[in-house]
Structures are given as C-alpha cells and as structure tokens.
Image 1: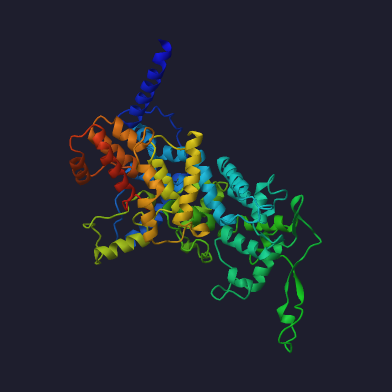
Image 2: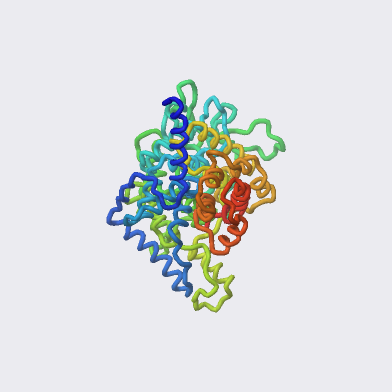
Amino acid sequence: MKSRLLPLLVVAAVFVLCQWAVRPSVSLNATPTEAVLVDAELPTTVAQIDGYFEEIWQRQDLRPADPADELLLLRRLALSLMGTVPSLEEIRQFELDDQPDRFERWTQRYLDDPRFADYFAERLARCFVGVGGGQFIVFRRDRFVSWLSDQLTKNEPYDSIVRQMISSRGLWTGEPQTNFITAAVANQDLDENKLAARSVRAFLGQSMDCAQCHDHPFDANWKQGHFEGVAAQFGQVEQGGLGVYDSAKKMYEVQDLAALDESKEEPDDIPMREVAAAVPFGKEWVPTEGTTREQFAHWMTHPENRRFERAIANRVWGLMFGRPFITPVDDMPNPSEDESDRDVLDMLGHDFREHGYDLKRMIVTIASLKPFRLKSVVEADNDSQTDVSYEDMVSLLDESWGLFPMTRLRPEQIIGSMLQASSIQTIDQNSHLFTRFRRFTNERDFVNEYGDLGDQELVEQSGTIPQALLRMNSNMTRGAVKSGFFSACGRISNLSTTNEEALEAAFFVCLTRQPTREEREYFMGLLGELTDKRRTPIIEDIFWTLFNSPEFSWNH
C-alpha cells in the first residue's frame, strides 16, 4: 500500500508547490535580506548628485518625470545587474517584503547574488579583452571571466583588479588575470599597440588609436609619441612555457620612418628605433621601483588620475541606465580642471576613490539617485513653464536625465528575460543542471543569431526586421510560450484558480507589472469563462503577445 501511495504523494507535493508559486497572495518564505550597510557619506553623495540634476532642471524650468513604482524599479535593477527580468518567485517575495527600505535591501540582495558577479564580469570583460577567442593555447577568455567574477564576488577594490591585469605574471590558466595580456597575442607575438590602445580605452575611457600613426587630429593631448610611450610599457613582456613574464633585455621598437632615405621610392629595409616607456601626463605619479608594467599600473590607478575613476563611473552608469552619461563610453573628453565645472562623473569618481574603489557601493549610489528612480514617460499636462512643445520638453528632459532613458535591451538581456519568463522559479546557480545548461546554450545561440554587439554594446542600436522575426518565430520563443508541466505558461494555465489570477501572473512573469484596466478587459474577454484546458492556447497566445510587445524588449 505504501509503495502505491508514494507516487500520489509526490504528485500532490509538486501540485502544492506549484500553487504556492503561482498564487499572488502566498509567501515563498524568502530569507530576509540584511539591511544595506550605508555609511554616513552615501546620503550626502546622493544628495549632492541629485542637487546637480535639480539645478539643471530648475535652470531650464523643467519638471522631471514622476517617480517610478518599485516593481518597475525592480525590473530595471534586475536587467542592469543580472541581464534578466525578475522571476515570479522574486516578485512574490518583493510584494510580501513590508520592511523599511525595501528597494535598498533588494539592491544589496542582487549585488550579493552570484548572478550579478557572473553578468557584470562578462560586461566588463568585453571592454578588457573583447569577445574573440584569441589564440587558444595562450588565451583562455573563460578563465579570465571566471577570475573577474570571483573578484566581484569578493568585492575586490577596482584599482586592485586593474593593477593585477596590467602587471601580473604567470601562466594564463593558473593566473587568469594575465589573459588581459595574452588577449593581445597574434601569431605567437604580443601586439603592444593593441594593449596600449585597449588599456587607455578600458581604464581611462579615452581613444588614442589615431595616435598610433600620427598625432590625434582632434585631441592635442594625444601625440604619436604618447602612443609609442604607452605601448612601450608592455615592451618587456614575454610569454612562453612559464606564462607571462618580463625581460629586462627586451626593448620596444618601432619603424623609424623619419630616418628613411627620401631618394629611395621603395626602401629595402626600414630602420628601427627604440622607444622608452613613458606616460602622456602625470609623470610624477610613476614610481621609481618595480617592473615597467608595475609602474604603469600604479600610474594608471593613481588617486590623482581622474580619468581612471571617471571612466569606470561612466561605464557603470551606462550599464545601469542603458546609456552612458557621456557618449561614447570609450572616447570621453579630458576632465575639466575648473572646480566649478565638475559633473556627475567627478562626483561619483571622488566618492568611489574615497571609499576604496568599491564597485558595489558605486552601484548602490547610482541606484539611489533620483534619475534612476524616475518614470521614462511624462504626462502631456506636465506643468513645465517652458514655452516649448511637448515633444521638445520630452527631448530636454531626456538630455538632462529628467526621465529614465528608454533604451533597447541588449541581446543577452532579451534572451535572459525570455528564458526567465518561461519559468516560475528563479533561474540561477541553484537551478537544475539541465535548466542551467539549457540557458547557457540557448543564450549563446540566440545572441549570435540576434547580433552580438561585442565590446560596443553601449552604443545606441536600432532594431532590425530580422531581430523582430527572430523574437516572433525562433525555436526559443516557441519553447518559451509552449504550455508544459514545468513551464511558466503551463503552470499558470493549469494551476491558476481564476482567469484573473492567470492573467495577472502572465503579466508579472513577462512585464513585471499588473495589466492595465484596458488590457485586463481585452484579455479577459478572450478568456471568457474558460477555466479548463481550453484556456491553455489563449494563455500561450498571451505569452507570445507579451514577449513580442515593444515593452518587453525595452528598458524603461
């Protein structure tokens, strides 16, 4: 008798758990998140930056958009920190969290989630080493991303992370940070020019690529000699059986075109000249001890190097808003020397430096700012006193961060959201191995087909017809909306006790909000009084419609 009852008990237990996840009023017994440890300076920094924006709005006589509701903020936060919408499981937990400072504590919860470290590591790795596979024997991108994820998990100071990448020695498998160096190996030779250009772009947010061949045509601060001096910082690097190391005997050389005999139209042999390591500014920041790379790493992360802190502040701002504060993110202008002309990046950078280059603290700061918590739309009756049209007013607010900028989700955010919306439970490191493998393979294939943005993912992109068709007709979409025992669509359709409950759960899963009155009336009209299997195709159609709505594929 016991052997016969066991399968029934298992089925009953699964049914109860499924009901538990779907019903809107039932707790999932989440472990309470500890309150965010906010030091005394954080509110001051937030108020200072908010004051910067409020002064701009007041000067332009603009009223910013209204504050966004916290479920919308939760969606923004999950997309920016983990590349996915919140699960229904998380939404239920969030709704039942009635403790003070709910959003602040959930910000900390997401920052402590391994999904954040993995996702942000990939985002940063794109600007550090690109997206290419490189030469497999000497470059292991997977090991580098894993190492970077570990650093973020431990909340290693950002300046320390950068110094390790620039100056570390060892084998690229045992010392994964050295893959920053070996990513520039081509045909077994290290490309110092590539390392120089990438270092300045990634860590200083500036482009000096043009100066490789001639003085920069638009920025007098970058001369060809500056580029050569930075490239020479890596001139002593060797890579071999013991990994990356430095050889004092090696010198960086360039072709000495100035020494060519002008009487020869096609010179047989272009002479070479040695170039000593040098920096384009802040020469007093260079220490006298250590290898050339160690000295360069110290110079790059020096507390007085404002370009360093501004560059990462602009990149993190871009990852959280979908748009950098200054565009393009890797070709920023030189910082102003005028104290009265300091902008948001200066304020964030100063706070970042004063608090130990803490990336998580910077994220908490940005998530606490008024621009991050505004709606992305303004009402037509906005009481701005400016004598401009509604369209011009919206444009002015968008330029001055008086509303949250609407940006297209990047490919990994699209597929991450579709995969998460196909499940009631949170897809994370605790999910079934099959679920995690399915996410990895589907995400990789979808991003490749949708169009990987590479290291230019913060450049504004327009949508394409093939991308829209892929969202509508791909195997991933068909699988996500198909009703099944473990799929969100199937569980909502089969286990919701009312159509109201099913419709609300579908909207929460896909859009992290309840349906509007008009949406509720329309879809309830389609569902009618059906509460059996006949409503399943309608629920599938609702999922497909929400997946392909503009709202699903935009951050707002």
